[in-house]
Length: 118
Image (cartoon, rainbow, N blue to C red; front, side, top):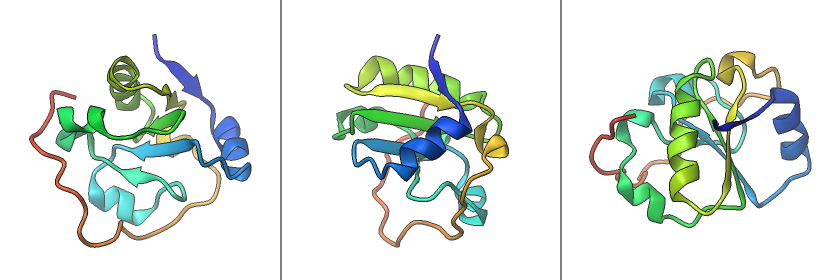
């Protein structure tokens, strides 16, 4: 079973300005653009491919989705394939009551490859 990080725990980690932490938002790009956890990266679940495992990952990764269900699946797969402590955000973005940024990531995002079974 994949570990879960509560919104309070994630807020504390983000407040510590930890460079060894990544927040991965697997929601669709329009939902991400409407609002997301500051400094999170949008990697929609439907576009995740095997090349994601070959990336350099920080020591800790927290995966966020809409309500905390899909993120458990993706977090479990990431946890099995990358050298990082991976968890799912409990309750997903719906439970997040911290700061929110609007807008999408910069132009020229990397091609994430073929769709995955997530």
